[in-house]
Image 1 (cartoon, rainbow, N blue to C red):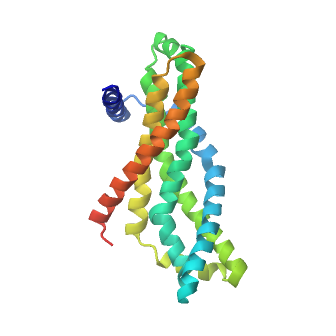
Image 2 (tube, rainbow, N blue to C red):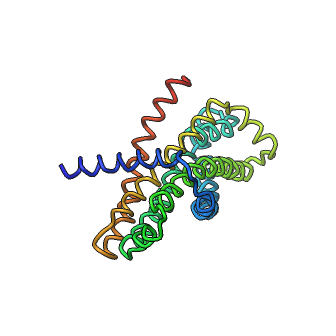
Image 3 (tube, rainbow, N blue to C red):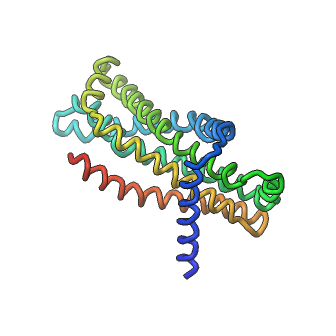
Length: 249
């Protein structure tokens, strides 16, 4: 019964986020600051991870396709795998760890130190200022960071491939991009907007409802990562089915 209550409260919390996101006034300055903190500061993590994932995928793809003498399909296979599924899901899970833990800990610390009550006392809408701005920033940042991961992943695949076969840069990326269509790129990238909403909403809900002092802050941070990751994977299954319905292979 307690679980159903939490699910209902979290759903109501997410619905309030959606309503407040489209209702003026808008906190542009705070949204831009959160976009920098949550998005720009995640660039090194995403770029390095994408590069490593691209190298590993290229090596595994080569090992599989070499059995059939189809090494020429490595750039196309790597690009399709990254753009359709590996890039969005990996970026979402990485950012659920970094962003989710950060939001949960930050808002939890503000709650236990009564900073949120202080904002309310100064006539500031704490929900709009603390929660809505972070959700909007995540929704904007996730597709951009996913695109970065896709590109660095393909570049990592190029580095791995050219070190073995000496494939030219232009030839590699020409083969990679000719295999990708807008029906592959756009839906897979846009679904990360849903990932961003899930990560920020779950982390904000757990942070805002923190109790038990500093112990509760640590618990909120851990629960934010776990809950957002599980919901992200579940949402990914549903979104993939929806994408295949509208864009059948």
